[in-house]
Image (cartoon, rainbow over all chains, first blue to last red):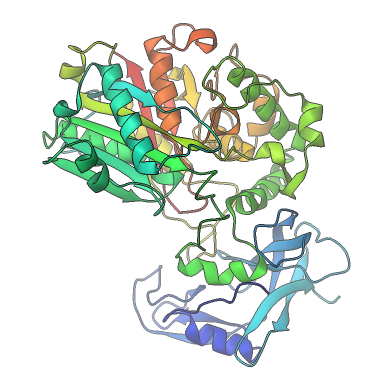
Length: 131
Length: 391
């Protein structure tokens, strides 16, 4: 990792939960809509009350890139970044590095692969489900 | 559609365009570039700086704002000015907002400019520029996902997987635009390329090769917006602003919206508003300058602005439809891929040139209506576009 994420006041607790390997999204107390990333308001009913809900850290591969250009000082090219549609929040696309022996396949089911950096920071990569 | 309180269609016009040379190292400040482009646009229109009562730009903290350019040109009392934060997605919004200001009578002559040292000082996603200040960054940058070519490559592959779009489709677009640039003395890249050249160019971020990516350019470009009535009295044929539209909302980065589809852009929602304002449809467009930060950006917008069915953008380009002698000439100047990257304003200026009939060897005969578009909303969830027509 060459860039350390800077949590904001909305996302701090999400990162704290990830550090304990709890994959959580927000669920609206009023209408039950789940959402990610962390935001104060439910975009469906525009109310503020919500709670964290732990979900299976699973999704499907929607796309990926194989990066060759050194955009990030210190990164080792080539590396793969995947775009994953979260099963728990189908309207949501998340990103992470690919953790697999082979390239991703279109639409394949993946699971989070936690990459512990230190005590307070864990990153979320993606690996073939059941693999 | 809700009743519009101010119908500004065809009430304002672009009366002049101005450029600095496009280079890889201007050797001067963005303030200097801005002043040069503003003065060149005024000269083209037959106006002087004393006629200017408005200035507008868009920028991402990388260039001179109106509050610096005005005093540098001795303008002590602007009636209207706009320092729009944002990248390519707001490039056409700036011209649209100037048109609104002029139509409303707040200002009479507004110069919209973009000055950028995008190669020698502030490379997008590269040297001289910090990581963008967006809450989305924390979910992406730790994975080495930071630069527009990566983001667009991600969406391009999603389109390839869903619709069968091929590398050769992207390549044909790059080849076609280079052929246009070969006829444009201002273009930085004028040597023709072949599909084999495209396929042999090195990987940047698969599925993108080098020739999928726009240039990084030092330069500036400006356009003068005034009333249609005043423009008719000036030295150049006026080009009317028939429609200006804004749109956006859904983020593709990490989304709180329902049903984010990475193969659809904000342009799909904007397009009906834009066409309705002009009273025109896609079939009425004679020439289109389409924001081409990357090859795929053009292909997806050809679909979202209604020139072909969803998913058909690649085959549409491969058919030759977008070449200079095709039914819809696209990026007649060569675009960002081959003319130069001035963050959207050079697309507006090229549309003006085509409609005035002064585009030289790359002129589309009889062009009367042009579409010019902004970054379609992948990086910031917003976009903007203009329909211009010959008076």
